[in-house]
Length: 187
Image (cartoon, rainbow, N blue to C red; front, side, top):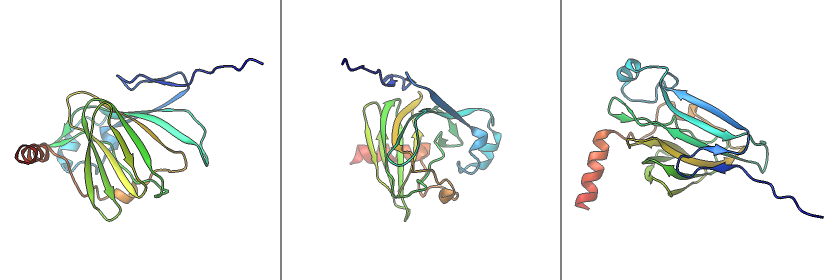
């Protein structure tokens, strides 16, 4: 008996494009991000049809023991003095973790515990981010190019956006980045 060799799905490491399997794609437009940006006037003045980010996912089974795999492609841009970012979420099943892999571009991963403690991790090609359970997470594109990150998470995790309806405890702005750069220079 000769075993068959199956070609699994592929990711192009330089662009983050998935191929070799059925894909699902979901764009998120500026108009979908009501309440995400601090400057509501600047948000309302933007083009609601502008794609801020899109997620492409392998169309895989869901259920206990199954994993989802997807790539977020976050465009560069700003609303007011805040960089484009994903909506961010806790998992509906809070104990479930996730792993991000930086593929292209540069940005930050904002992590927040349930009690509001935050931290930032730099996202760049080759970076690996272990997001523990009980932790909300959001990607922020601080660069001039598309920020792409591959994510793998349990299909049973779900998303809880409502828990962050008041926003994250930390906002990353152009001013924040200047302060962070000064801290690094003086550190």
